[in-house]
Amino acid sequence: MTAFLIANMAPIMFAALVIFLLSGFPVAFALAANGLVFGFIGIELGLLKPELMQAIPNRIFGIMSNDTLLAIPFFTFMGLILERSGMAEDLLDTIGQLFGPLRGGVAYAVIFVGALLAATTGVVAASVISMGLISLPIMLKYGYDKKVASGVIAASGTLAQIIPPSLVLIVMADQLGRSVGDMYQAAFLPGLLLTAMYALYIFALSIIRPKWVPALPLEARNLRQANGDSGVISLGLLLIAASGAGFAFASYYQTKHPEIATDALGIYSATIGIGFAFALAYINRQFKIGLLSRMAEQVVFVLIPPLALIFLVLGTIFLGIATPTEGGGMGACGAILLALLNGRLNLKLTKQALDSTTRLSCFVMFILIGSTVFSLVFRGINGDLWVEHLLTGLPGGQIGFLIVVNILFFVLAFFLDFFELAFILVPLVGPVAEKLGINLIWFGVLLGVNMQTSFMHPPFGFALFYLRSVAPKAIRTSDIYWGAIPFVLIQIIMVGLIIAFPQLVSTDSVEAKKEEIQLDISTPMDDTPAPSFDLPKEGGADEMRDTQTTPAHAL
Image (cartoon, rainbow, N blue to C red; front, side, top):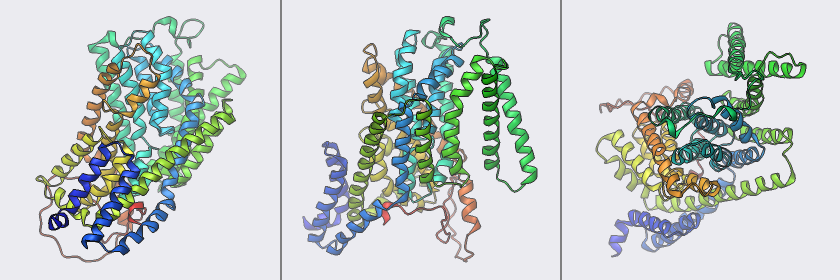
């Protein structure tokens, strides 16, 4: 019996953790208890030295002093303040009016606003609850199918999982030991593509099942001109003028600074174009010139504040002006300012936001402390080698590894949320991915898209629970579940697209930075043929990782 325990300690420890989790015991305490129990068993069996357990205080201190994790309370607070500032309500009302004449117009508005809220709040609960309270009654009133209405709201809210400043990507970067800024930049295109796929699904429904996604009736469109005109032409002309201003600035600035990076130039020119549109709308309103329609004015004044906040947070991070933690701090200040300008900032709102932020931050910290106790003992009994041998021995090389890992994450997402998956499984599969030559930034984004499904899985998806809490009684729970399934399938398709087309996740900037400081050390060439599937490669062991942050679990 003793020999059996010694030979199979790692799989027994992992199986015990699964039983702990399925029993409903709190995750943080299940991880810590599992680690401590098997730590003592390992000491008794002679597998571990007692001195190993003395590393626990140092690892906990390393977690508490990890600057990367400071971004979590900042972005959470920003999202909760924005949720209560009325920004979501204004956005949904205005964008709903803009797309109202189209079949599925309100659904398009929900998707667009969901992406915009994701880029400003990064909090799924805030997005789903806001859109559920505001859009769901409107969609039901004008004849939307219940399943489609509930599904599009839940799915659009989960865009906060993958579109920066996502909390998932912060945790993923920390656990994989990579830069949060690089993870944000790599996830931007997949997030936008997933948004477009949601919109494409609604477009297909508008052709196949037009009665499920009707247009808003004429009497519901209240931003029309006095003569009945929609004002969309005026908005289009304003967009052309703003684009022209941004393009002119880009051409001028590039001649003066030819060395500027393309993404930095794009951010600067977009800022100029947006500023031009806002200035023109402000002058038109103040002096009553009449150049712009009501629709154009309303869209500008409603869209500019969140776009300004996106630049304040993501723009400064992408340009290298601020770290993600500093960007989160500026975003929190910007959210407070927006709420103040809207006249909705008060002591009660601030107290509620601070209370929720503290709860979530403590939740993350306790899970991370529990996971570091578990990983310390698990690695002490060579559990990481057991996982490595298990996964590297799979047929198919990189592709076999990716398929199995994604299936594992997808199945476990039925029972665990993304924090638990990130803190328990990512530290185990990350080193294996790196050993197989897979770029960890690319791998982190792939897992982020996969873990997004954890919010949409019937019957335990948190986004479905959030929507159920605010949905009227006319919406049955089964309607929410059936409405979520097409969007879960879309997310699975997105995972497949990222594996099939690795270039969708941009890791060029990361590799360029590494090449700049690569040490010229000759190493023996490996005669082993490279795998036929060309995934983004991680840098070699002799490269200095200037984008790497210290993972909390490795301290």
